Image (cartoon, rainbow, N blue to C red; front, side, top):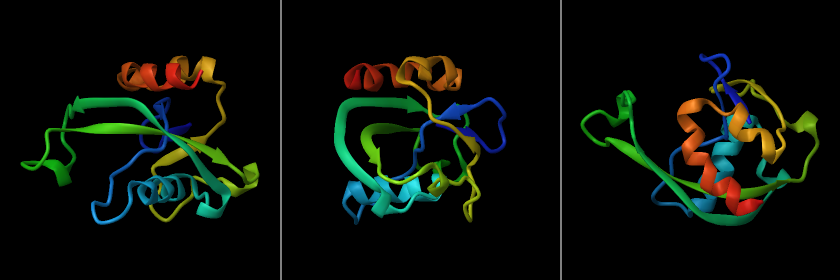
Length: 127
């Protein structure tokens, strides 16, 4: 999980947008690399989960104003094949200030409260 750069205590999974012209799997790899510095060679997609989470933005980011009112998240189970030293949040455009491994059982306690409800179904699916 990553702790948001400008919001101490706000933990979440890496996430991000999908490039329409590319396979969705490419977006999964790209977002993990952008947020945690992990190279594609150190990752393996295991499964796209059935669970999704749809929500409206509380305050739309600038790129979404007059275009989108929210988003739908898909969740992916990804194996990390590298070592902890391959993970860094000091990427060119950092979004996280810290990262940590979390047991599945503690994720809902750790995650930012606004994200909690959206994480229930995917976590149940992988237990």
